[in-house]
Amino acid sequence: MKEPILSTRKSHILSTLLFLVGLLALGYFKTFWPSILLVIGIPLALRQYLVGNRYDMAVSLFVFIGAFITAQFDIAWEIVLPVIFTIGGLYILFREFFGPKEIDEVEKEIDQEKEIEEETKK
Image (cartoon, rainbow, N blue to C red; front, side, top):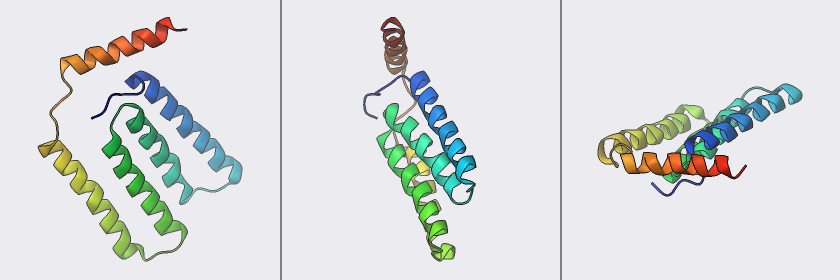
């Protein structure tokens, strides 16, 4: 895990804002499927990027954009989607059992200090 760009709180706020803007665009353009995959996937990937989870971001983009392309361009989803979701699931499985352990106290302190710095900059 790399150094976070923003605190968890700030990254959650920005990704929620992007999600709401995406929902607004869906309503404005009167389109739902498969655009909802991008509206969900891109804010999720943004949040993961901002908190320093680069590999999680890459897998999220791979899964959501892959599913979007499959649905948008009428690609045979019977083969492609199971492969995409299997790769995503295997990544989650290996990350949980073989990846780094829980966030330790030092990383929590760094996150809190970053939030305090951001608040004092206002």
